[in-house]
Image (cartoon, rainbow, N blue to C red; front, side, top):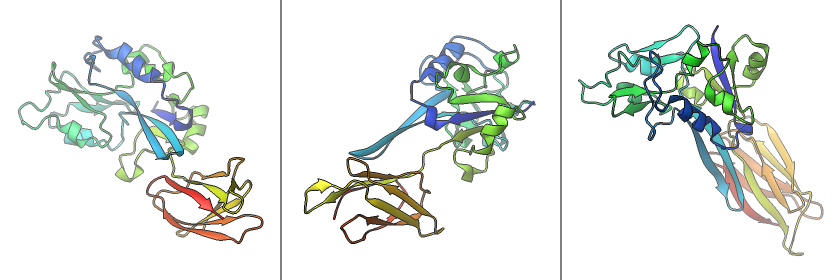
Length: 278
């Protein structure tokens, strides 16, 4: 059965339980032929990348758990001169610790590390081998249904299973790859990856008070799609889940005020337009 992992970013709180569980399972433990012991420091076979988005006071923090993607088109496999990296029938990509020599004879450092676009491979200085996530294949072989990271997640942000499992199949309908432009066809997919927002606050300059219920309209100048929202009780608005690197024409409509065009914004980042004075 081909395995896959689906990570719902909206459910991740950045608690690091997955990181701790991975360390607990692999530090000091030899799980050959899948992995030699993970060093206590420096390796994160799963990590949680946190990022602050926007600017004060319109700020959001997003957490994205990142690990080896067990790619169908794995660059690390193509780069390995010793053929030490292989794919199991269930789809897991494994670095054979018995064959890996860390590219010691090349003087370049492990080529698989340089080839991995997700920075998911690490070099064990003591053992002189490359190492990474194994999906805890040693546990799956013993009958476990999921790796330690998924088992430890308190919010069920990490789901793991067979592709033909009804629950996994349903999750896969809305899942997407991290950096799909790479074409690696990863077996780790994501739900609710961060999309850009445009935020601000609408203020009635004459009354010196915020405007509640103002209508904010954003038209995607590339696709013609229209997104709308309204200001809340603090006069704030958030146009969420926009498309990356699109240009949006943003307007404000409020009772008692003429329509105002804020401008055209390129969503190559999250945007705080600040106070909009009417």
